[in-house]
Image (cartoon, rainbow, N blue to C red; front, side, top):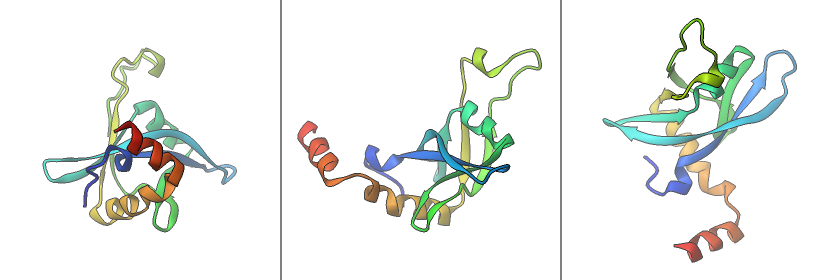
Length: 121
């Protein structure tokens, strides 16, 4: 089950801080299917935050850790992320986690927002 509506593809990404347990939104991601596999793309500066805690996204069971393999464009030793013009990372998701994410995506859009989106289409 993959998102075909762009509004179902975009999700917030959170971090649960290791030190405090606090959960806060740190970015967004977009679900895509590539060569039959589910992926969540985001910015590399978002995945850099894994140094401080677990990245999470909304699922049917609440906000849960993102389940999958993470990869990103690494920086040269003398570079820093603010100079990174590519700034891309992704998770190759496990199938069950993708379905859990997509099942709840429409729950986060209010009826007023859905009406506005429909009117813009």
